[in-house]
Each structure stands twice: as structure tokens, then as C-alpha cells.
Image (cartoon, rainbow, N blue to C red; front, side, top):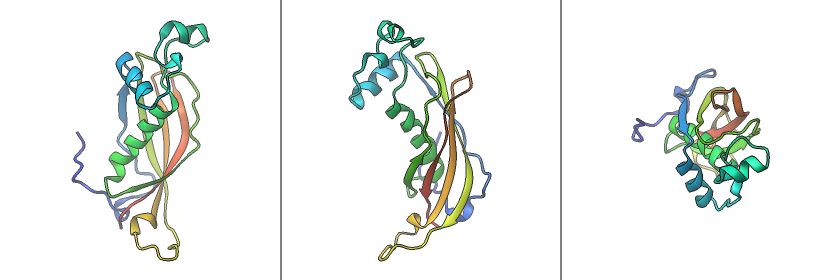
Length: 154
């Protein structure tokens, strides 16, 4: 269980630190709700027969759901005062289908202090970390590797 009152600071982070992996079971219910929530009504995301008619093994997660998993995993690490600045290198390599459990992993690749932009006063935008991210579904890496750039309070 995440304690959202806890806040990680940039000074606490070390390159090589691992994020706690977060598992996301892909139930039919979750896939249907995600498709409706992000208005991706393509039947490949909520209808087995249709997904199979396109060559997929089963209905599968869409990009927004998978990106949301990366964001959730990073947010648990950076806390509520952290700032998500970029997602890079997000690549789907394999289907993440109903019945799979997708586990998202991360590791701190680097940390640095960015030059302050003129008028910028928010240290969470200057004290940055790059988190290497990837997802697996029990059959290997299904998304990534990629990266999230985030800012943390000092």
C-alpha cells in the first residue's frame, strides 16, 4: 500500500535505485473501463472475437492504459510533489491481453540539476531524474524500455 503522505526528495535518490514494481492484472472489466475512459472504442480492446479476427490472441490493452501504468509506477516513486515532465521511448513490443498481469519496473538511470529557466522558482522542475521504465507480462518485456523524466523537490 502506498503512503501518499510520504514524499521522496531528489537528495534521497541514487542512480541505480530500483522502483518498487507495480502489477496490473488485465481483466476484461479493466480493459472495457479503460477503453471507455479514454474513448478508444476500437473493438480490439474490448471484444475477443474481433481482436482475434485481426490476428491478436485476445483483446488487449491500449496505449493510454499502458502509459497510465508507467505513470502510476513513477508517481508512486516520485510522490505527489514530484512533477512528470516527459515520457520517452514508449514502445509496445507485444500484446498485453486479457488474463495477463502486466508488471511495470523502473530504475533511476541518472539525476541532474537543470539550469533554471528565466523566472522559474519551482525546484521540482530543476532537480531531475531519468527513470528507465519497462513492462513485462510473464512472456517477457512487452513495453519499452523507455524513460520517464521527472522533477523532484530537493
